Structure formats: C-alpha cells, structure tokens
Image 1 (cartoon, rainbow, N blue to C red):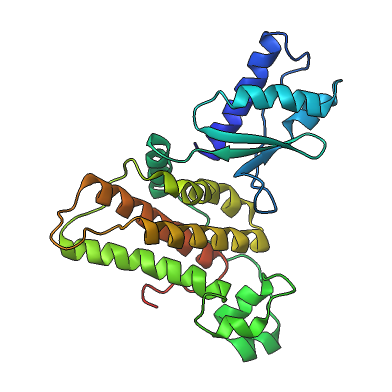
Image 2 (cartoon, rainbow, N blue to C red):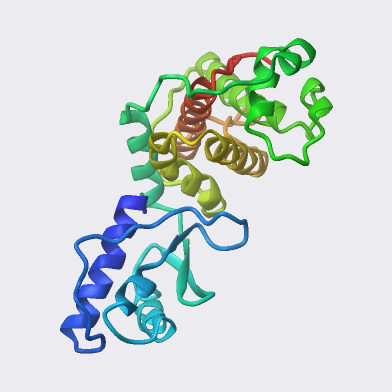
Length: 272
C-alpha cells in the first residue's frame, strides 16, 4: 500500500463511518498521512481524528472508531492511538502491494535538482565535499569525524554502501544471466517497502534533513532485508521468480538511494 493508497483508505473509512451514522462530522476532501518523526510510531501517522474533532466531538473517541474500522482493511497490520488522537498506522508491506510499490519506483521521475545546502568552508576543507554536505544535514550530536571512516557508525557510509550493494547485486545477476521482474516479496521486506513508497513524498518536500533521515532509514531496512533474504541463487540453484522479484526490489532501492544522494549533492558510487 502506497501513501496515496493509505490516504484514500483512511478517507474511505471516514466516509463509511459517517454513512453508518457512527460519526457525525463533515467528510473532508482529503486526508494527509506522513512518516512519524520518531521511530517506533508505525509507518505512517495521520491527524484526521483531530481534524474531524474541530466540528465537534472528542478526538480520541473519533480515533477509536477509525482505528477499529482501519484494522479491518487489507494491507494494514496495526493501528495505535497516540497523544490527543493521532493514528499511527503500521502497514503490511508483503505480497502484491510490494510488487506495486516496486513498479511505481521504476516508473517514477523524481526530483533531480540539488537542494540548497551551505556547508561551512572549514567543514569542506576538513571533511571533503560529500561528507561536508552530509554534515550540514546531520543532527547536532553527531561526531563529524565519523563521516571520514568506512564503518557502520558512519550514516553516510551506510547509505552509500547500501547503494553500492544494490548496484553490485544487479551486476552479479547480469553475470548469472537473469534480470529483475517485480513480483511478490517476503513479508520481512515490509519496512523497506514502506521506505520506498514514501520516497516520492519526501523527495517532493525538498527538506534536506528529512531526506537524509529517510535515506538512512531506507539503507538500514535494505541492508537488513538483503542479509536475511538472498537476492542471488546459491550454488547450483537456478534463478527463480523469487530471485527476480528480490532483484527488482534491490534495484528499486538503488534508484531511490541514488536519487536521494543526488538531491543532497552527494555522489552515489557504484563501487565502494
């Protein structure tokens, strides 16, 4: 389920609740969903209950009605009510929805222009251009010296390594004589699919810090997934549909990571 799909699902849920006289509020024209600012709060969050409560009613009670109804929708694994009435939604990213997300990434034309970043001259001299630009979008507590080492503790290295790994899988698959073909993927790919589905919206927002955190999330999800789910056949194993689908997911990830790095004005090497 893509963010647009989820937005329509939530709006449809509101409309049905009103039609069934369970909610007595005006149905909005649209419902917005966004990635929560903190991990552990689901894949997406919406303030629709707070929006509806402006017309009268308790936001948490409205959220409770919508939560129960949303849990009955396919593609939604969990819904939690947070704070005054926010709905935190966790998606089930497996199966056909995964194929849809990968196809949408392949077809997407993302923003290519570099975002306006202004790393300090001293940082450029000390770290180099790429690391200095990443430093400009890093949280204050990050030890900037980490950006010079190729270690897991270096977030820039993790993002660029994930991109290089995706490109390497494509090269190795080509050598083995098979290509990517979007299809059903493992349920463990849910976090990665959620990150890929959100890239268009994050990219369009043109918010450098948010984009950097999104790339970190995408890279982390990809590296965990591909370690658990081999993309390439092993030994004498022949390429199967599952390998083609996994390769498609890896290539979609590579496209998203390359695009995000390009927007930040940072090179995305194919070898690392």
